[in-house]
Amino acid sequence: MSGPATHRELFERVRTHLLAQGRPSLDRSGGCVYRSPEGLRCAVGALIPDGAYHPGLEGLGASSDCVMDVLVDAGVVPAGCVPSSPVMDMLDSLQYVHDTCPHGLWAAALDRLESAGLTGEDWIPPSGRPGLTLAGAIVRELAPDGHGRRPE
Image 1 (spheres, rainbow, N blue to C red):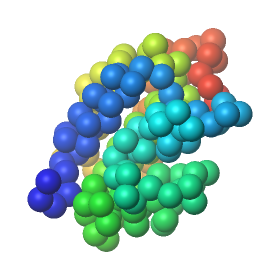
Image 2 (image 1 turned 90 degrees about the horizontal axis):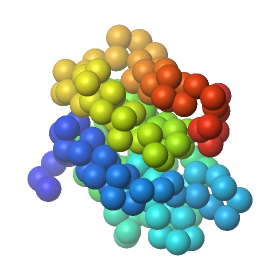
Image 3 (image 1 turned 30 degrees about the vertical axis):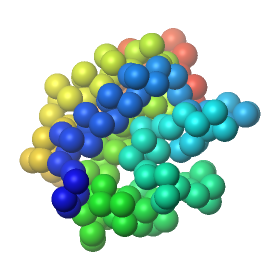
């Protein structure tokens, strides 16, 4: 890939990965991780190349400096990317779906995020993290009984 991927390309890579994998990437205690002991990957973990992954990333959010540096170095996101950028809002939203939504509802949640325009290059968060807020609302609507793994 030459240069950072488009929002659409990243979204499709994550969607394809999550739906093919069919289950969350969890550590032995049930917490979400970039890479599980069984080799599973979370939404953002699917974008981290093997050579760039290290256990020190675990426990850090996708928008942390360390994880963002890995994503920039791997050419996943553009240099100078900041946590509030549209691409990071999208990645955080995809991560939220992985971490909180029952995996049987991932397809529906991803479809809803896509329908809301989250994958467009013109997705401009006016302030805050509207994609992440949207992801939370979608998960709560799809799983109102709180069957997500880590409810807010």
